Amino acid sequence: MANDNKSVSFQEKMEKNIWLLLIILAISLSVGGLVEIVPLFTMKNTMEHNAAPELLWQRQPGQTLHDHKPGDGMRPYTSLELAGRDIYLKEGCYTCHSQMVRPFRDEKERYGHYSLASESMYDHPFQWGSKRTGPDFARLGGKYSDDWHRKHLREPRSVVPESVMPNYPWLKDNLIEGKDMASRFEVMRLLGVPYTDEDIATANAELAGKTEEDAMVAYLQVLGTMATLDENKVYRQ
Image 1 (cartoon, rainbow, N blue to C red):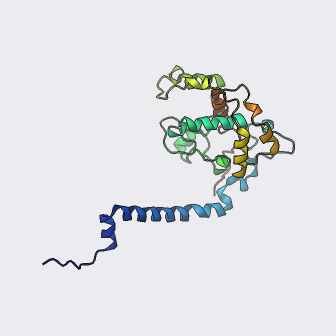
Image 2 (image 1 turned 60 degrees about the vertical axis):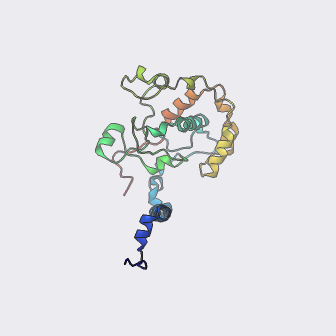
Image 3 (image 1 turned 135 degrees about the horizontal axis):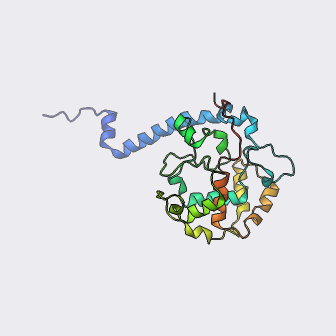
């Protein structure tokens, strides 16, 4: 006669109860993630600009975002660039393009200097990603002309015959004038992006007469151009 009073182990309970298994998995993954991630917020060397302040734009009183020159250091996105970033997210470009050069020889030879955490300090959310149907975009800015990007967005195979990227012809016709970027700037400031009152006051005016294609090109052209990275300097210990 079978023993109905035989004790059941906790593992066996999970194997027989999918909901219990999912709850235990969720708790375990959450604890593991918190233990791994939370300490990073208390470590100064997580962000490289704490040891290398030249990575950050030293904005002077009265300067606007348009006074920044490539290589001056990381700064908040302009209104047009941020609008382009919003379109980048809306169109799901991040599902095929990462924005993180890994510290491996083959990646550095193809894309340039490996990515630093400080380069994403004003990205909410960041666009590091891992899937690459297309190339990484971390250092795309300045590699091609504005005209090349416009042709590529409208018909990718006109400039890259082997491309599998879809066409985005509607971007050139969709105006972004009237988009409330001032509110976007205010939200970003709440998240720690140092927009000034003047930046917010002039945010909407910058979009006058601009299309989604203009914004996308502005965003793509600024990627990886803000800070100058020294190939001979070790930013991470």
